[in-house]
Image: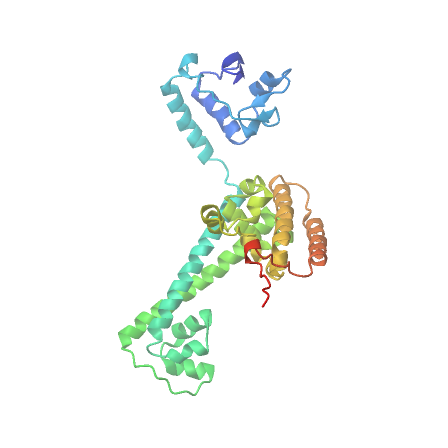
Length: 344
């Protein structure tokens, strides 16, 4: 740890030249903690500037070029650094996994299951549709594949559904029908796994982020945490970034081509946003993002539950927006396009 004045070292605190001790201190730094040496160096220093956000309690963070300080100059060689990194890697990988990390993986697993369901459902409809195309009008999604897995041929399906129709489909070879039934049975298993994963996510997100769940609901809270890469990462974002999570492509298109910027990302799924008139959605999204960020900070730092308070405050804000902007704004006509009256 170095106390510097521009490129001049005023005072320093060196780590012990022991790989295990250095790894322990680096692990503390990576977790965001301050070291006793840093606190000691910062004492009695006015208007201190620090080089990392982690040290913001000690002073104002700023960019600092520390390239003039080299480890070799103070007796820390490459072999010691190599041993330290090996120990640090083993130490960090064996730490308990935060539950929000499991939530991120669960959401991505659910997205994979949804994509698999959609692809296999499409394939099943095309394949079985050659034999019984009318079934698509009487059964959807899971019910469709369950009927095929249970009966196979169309006669059993029509008996269960109480249908009396003449199908225009062709007859299928027995081995081909077995393949289709096996596909339908596999798809039923994926639907079961999807339900189990959704239940697991609902339970987990309610424990990890109760205030966010009260404000946003479980599915939306889980997706925001997953999109940010974790609850701790979400809590560190500005509300404007949280507002646009999920709309990255639209934002990049705005920056690249100058098209209108997006007003919301995945928080559009919140009922108060997607049910609002188009001219109110931007303001409601901004208010919701601000409340959601407060909830994320409270949940991340294990504060008291305030979801009900935030939900009440957000409801008042939505009511104010609806009162203030009851009608859509009038479109402005560019000066060059204004119609001019001509005399005849």
